[in-house]
Length: 184
Image 1 (cartoon, rainbow, N blue to C red):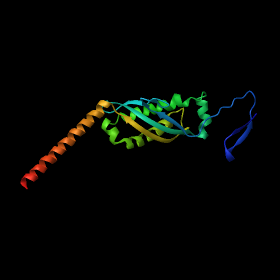
Image 2 (image 1 turned 135 degrees about the vertical axis):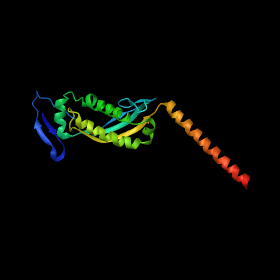
Image 3 (image 1 turned 180 degrees about the horizontal axis):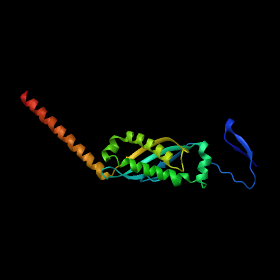
C-alpha cells in the first residue's frame, strides 16, 4: 500500500511492505486538563499540593503542548507504546507544580497567581528538556492555571478577618464623624 508522511510540500510518499507496521504520531497541539469539582474531573484530577505554610491546595490547570515533528521518531523509539503522556508528561507536570507551590504561602497563591503561572511555565519547559526520554520532543505552548482551590476553612477565616477589619474601619469612621458633628 502507498502511504504519505508529512503535509503540503513536505509530503513524502512511500510504499509499505505488508509485514511492516506504520504508527501515526499526533504532532498537532494537544491539551491536558487537570481539574476536579463536584461535577467530576477533567482528563486527570486536580493536582494536590502543599503550600509553604502546610495548607493543602488543589490546582486546576490546562496545559497545551505538542510534539516537535523532528523528534517524533526518537520519541517513538523511547516510548514504542506511544504512552509518553501517561508515563512522562503527566508525572512531570504534577511534580513541577508540587515543587513550585511549596515555595509560596497560601496567601501568596492568591496574590501572585499570574506570576506563579509564568514561573510554572518556565519550570515545565526546563523539566521537559531535562527529562532524558523527552529531550527536545515536547513543545510547551501554554500553561493556564484555572484555579488554586484553598481549603474552605481557610477561605472562611480570611473572609471573617476582612469583615472584622471592615467593621473596625466603619466604627472608626463613625466615631470621627460624631466628633466632627459634636464640635460643629
